[in-house]
Amino acid sequence: MKSRLVTMVYADHGAKPVSRRRLADYVLFCQELSTTFHELIVFRRNNARISQILPVPAEVELPQPPPAEQAPNPSGPRTSSRC
Image (cartoon, rainbow, N blue to C red; front, side, top):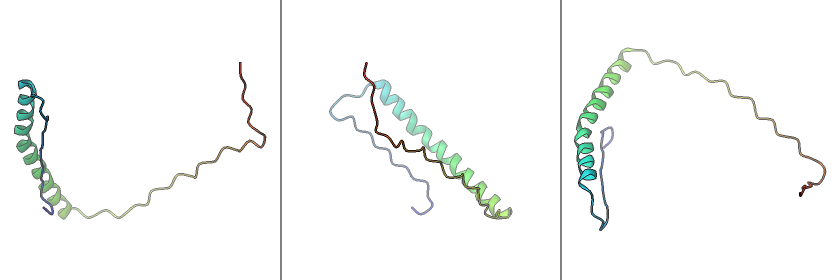
């Protein structure tokens, strides 16, 4: 399965019956998978060809954010106010 596009679809509603509407939605979803996978395969092929033609950009180091400052610790005991 190295670089293959694979999907596994599993549905289980237990002992409960499935409505016709939900079943129809599920069947429609499964029918659309082949078209979607075809588009993904074509997209991957086109990008593979482009990456062979264009030079690979050098790695760029992104600046790191400064470390977060810690809030000062109160030195006295905590008091709670009750109404």
